Length: 299
Image 1 (cartoon, rainbow, N blue to C red):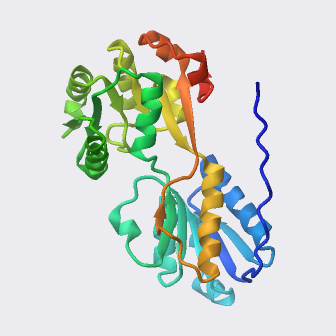
Image 2 (image 1 turned 60 degrees about the vertical axis):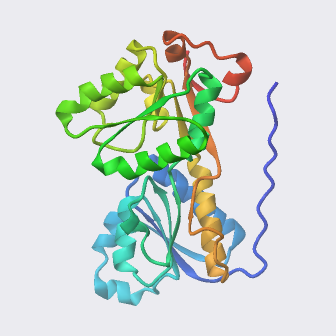
């Protein structure tokens, strides 16, 4: 039976700031646009007096200094995507910034007391919970990493160990080591969890990892629904619309003189996709109640 979810409208702010704000998108990549649309709608709904200027990064670059002086400087900037955050920091160093749609941000990107935002990263505990719901036998997850992703791998491993789980970590030092690394991690662990690292999880290597995981009958947790559609057992995605709303909430708090409880926040909502065909290939038979909690992408 389908469940009806009633979403109550958000109230208009009693003291609505009449500031100028800028939404700056790195590109027209559809997740960025989805987050920007919900962010803009939330701002307009809760604060009708606010003035919103929405630009793409290439438009910002074409604005001359003379034209920029003629316009009112924004009171706050909402950059969407890493490139937009970098550009906003350079162009508006003294203005509060509330970013969104940034995956695994570097420490330098988060430097400064005027930087706030919602990262795309999924908490490790959420990934582990979803994996265990489908593959309850898993107890020793594997993590592949390079120098670029060592911090993320270390943090995930520490969290898992704090919860009594002993992960297997294997470092990839060069492209020549990738195949050996894949074989070793699948031999030593009983599941593989992807972390953001384009040296490993790119359009060339990711299909190979998916194939080998299925061949070894091991669950592979991808980085997004695209991974699940390509054959990963499951992936945990952020809710892009809610990320936009979450960023708007933070921005309105700042404009109202309130400091958000946390400068950098995780997403509040998640969407988990499951490839049932892959589940069957690796010998998993999820129950009907478990399946209801997932977005099914292949039968």
